Length: 268
Image (cartoon, rainbow, N blue to C red):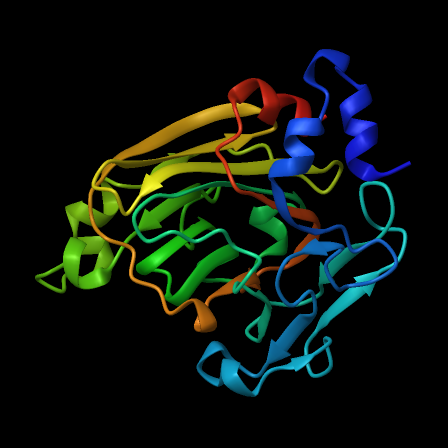
């Protein structure tokens, strides 16, 4: 029985048929590191850095990331054993439903770690979806570097020149800090899996918004996202585990923003 059918049975009223037709990318890591579902290249790639992304090769050779058999929620997972400074990613072309005028969707994944004890110093982004950088036409979540406990944040930023014309540094830029959704006491632990979901709507339209969910509960919404999202889709990537240490499982992307009820059911 498939992963999504099992979820469908939990609340029967929320049968996942609609989810199934809206699912565009899924990497469960069960039996293989390549994606199970995707309209683009399903291979997981790695490279020395994102500056060298064009030279990436399939697989995890040269990284300290392993395919962790039996360590996942229901099967296998990815384990980032030390602070991951390598590029580990799926190609976005065909796997991300990017629309420069109305980018809408959901990103869902699971993490297992103690941020304060497991992460190395510095910012850590478990997921970034971008073709350039975290501050330039990107969707991401991160753990902060200095806070105790480390805060968990959602960032959604369009074209850098459009939202930051004065080229201010993030810690000195209210247009950066006021956009973030910040969770000061997030529920991450080594003892159980935590579900992370990001829904976003109408990015690039002048009226974009994005919401962060943890274990099915909405944590906040970033609204008034007015700038354009300028992508070269061929360079786009679903970046996994930037500076991350811990386990990751069940990465999925949908072509629409799931409802709060659907997110809660998905996280069971």
